[in-house]
Length: 356
Image (cartoon, rainbow, N blue to C red; front, side):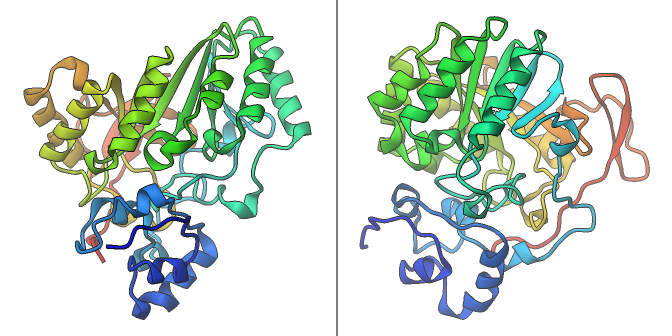
C-alpha cells in the first residue's frame, strides 16, 4: 500500500488516498464546509485501509453522521464561553485556568468538543494583544496555581513561540505548574524535537504534558519514541482518553491502551464521557456503559493504570467523576453532583448510528 507523505485536508485528498469513497463526496463536502479536516501522514499511514471499522479512520475521517444533530447538543458543550473573563482564558476552577493559545490542530478529531471554535478559519493562534491581556489576567489573579495550555493544539506553534509563552508565564511567581494538552506525540511525532522540548523546559516551574490518545493503534513506533523523548528530558506525561462508541468502548481495548501507556511511563489520568458537541451523538455511549467498563477495568488493572471516568457538565459546571452511582436515576436521567454540591440531571444523548 502506498505511503502517504503529505497532510490530507480535503475530501478530495481523502478520496485520492483511498480513505473515502467517491460516492460519499457530496455529503462529506457538506461536513467539510462546517468542520475542519486534517490528517497528518503519521495518522493516515496508521489507518488500515482494508478495514471498514478501522479505529483510526473513525476518529479522523469525516462521516455523514456529523450532519445529524441531537437536540441536546450545543456549540459550546462544556460552557467555556461562560467562564471566559478575557479572550483565551477559561477560569472554571479557582486554582487553575485554561490558556487557549492556538486555534488550529495538526489533526481534527471528528468528536472534538471545541469543533465549532477550532480550524484554519479561526486563525492560527491567540493574537499578541489577547495573549498579553490573558497573561495580565493570570498575573493579577494570585489564586491561579496551574496554567493549562490548550487550544487547538499548542504544540502546532513554533518552538520559538512556545518558549516565549513559557518564559512569560515563568515571570508570574504564583503560577507553579504548566500543563500542556496535546495530541502531537501520537499524531505528528516528528514535531517533538529538541527545540520544542527546550522551549517547554525554559522555566523553573513544574511542567506536565497531557497526552490525548484513544486507541492502542495510535501508539506507533514513532509515537512511542516521541513520548520517550519528552519523558527522558524530565517532563512527566499523563493521558486523556475519550470513551468512543465502536472505537474503544470495550474492556479489552481500554485495558491494552492503559497498560501500554503505563509501560511507556504515561499515567492514565482521565477517561472522558463524550461531550455534547454538534454532530457527535454517534460517538457517545451511555453513562451506564461507561460505568460497566470501569467496573471491569477495576477488576483487571492496578490503580496505576486506572483513569478517572469523568463527565464535563454542560453549562460550565465542571468535571465530575461518574464511575460510581451515588444517586438514583430519575426518569431515565443520571443525577450528578458538582464540586459545589449542586445537583444536575444528565440524560444520555447518543444514537444508534455507528460505523458508516
